[in-house]
Length: 180
Image (cartoon, rainbow, N blue to C red; front, side):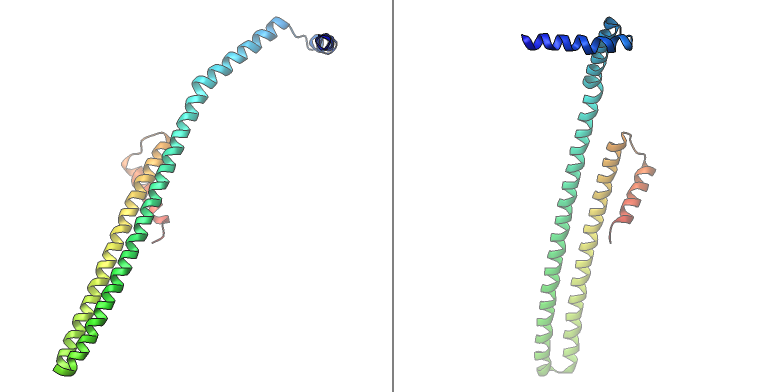
């Protein structure tokens, strides 16, 4: 109770001269405070709230796109590992065939040795070509998926639908920045 009296006296001693100096009209001041509060409430509920929700949804979509991109990169790495394993196996098979050919060449002769070596080299060449084709296909799929993700993210961030020329230009610019 005593504190309330002290605060009331303090407000009277401090606030009254300030109000008088700045010519504050209390009913108008209180009405302006209430108006400010109502406007603040309306903006927070109907403007800032939906905008923040929309930004959070976009943030989540972008995070999902990045997770998908990491998944694709992991798949590409696994594919390259499988390709390397297949190439290693093909090289081992080719080496085995060459060794067999050399053993047989001692029995059959020089002409048969040349045929076996050529067959082994052909197997190696085909295995390398198959590995290269698979790697190129995975790169193309990764670039296409990255382009789609980039177009989707750009569309969501800019808030407008991109036409075909915009999508093509953005995809080309993004793909040119990727390492080969």
